[in-house]
Amino acid sequence: MTNVLDRLPSGARVAIIRLRSLGDCVLTTPALSLLKQARPDLQIGLVVEDRFADLFTGNPDVDPILAPTASSLSRFRPHLAINLHGGATSVRLMLAAASGLRAGFGHFRFQPMYNVRIPRAQEILGVERKVHTAEHLASAMFYLGVPQRDIPRARLFAAPIARSRPYAVLHPFASADDKTWPRENFLQVAQRLEELGIEPLFVAGAGEDLSGFSEHTCFQGAPLEELKSLFAGAVVFIGNDSGPAHIAAAFGRPVVALWGASDLDNWRPWRTEHAVLASPNGIQAIEVSDVVQAIDQLTGVSVPHRSL
Image (cartoon, rainbow, N blue to C red; front, side, top):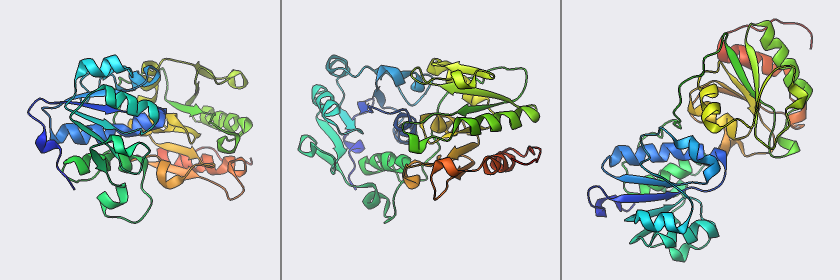
């Protein structure tokens, strides 16, 4: 271990570069929380793509949210830049910050550009197993000097949306066919929820087509601020392994995750009640009855039993 944090003056500026996916952004928030708790005096600037910036609004662990541009980094003038992504774009941004301290994982590409090379999470945490993405990101903070402790749940901030009856959020899409449960199965689950007096709400990104679910309330391409409020008040989330499942987990909502080709150890819902359902024959083979049972177990609301 090293202690880079001890080398930072009071009130120092730290830029954390976090590019790419929705799930990665959500699972960065435990690391941000650990850093801010250890050094509340630090001004933490988060470099994030515009499409994900609203995930971090209202987060007290982030001071400015910075655009992913060289000019934004150079104006911020951080004492320490931490690259949590490791690709060519993020390295260029890190160099534009002109920080005296440049930290990144030593097993990533471009590691000669760092003067603080962070070991693998297994070495930092003292484990041999695979680690969750939240653990991987938090381990960087431990290496930099944050006292090692339990890694908290992800943190997002929004007021729950007000609706006339309890509701569940369903996200029926994923990045690949082998990660996507069939549409007709989601519709059967939605029907069961209706029988319980729970409103099924379907959500989708701007590039996803919800027309096959139009008999239910749909939120197509809704802004992240609206989606956060929606997730914050849900009775349960049901969906494929994808970014929205991590949003639900960050609000402490029960999650029923239909699992396909992703690595379960790396990406399972983090620090919330959940059921991960999978089949050796692929995601398409997961039974509706198993999802119904998981909803029952997680929410305590019994779904009427009938043949499926």
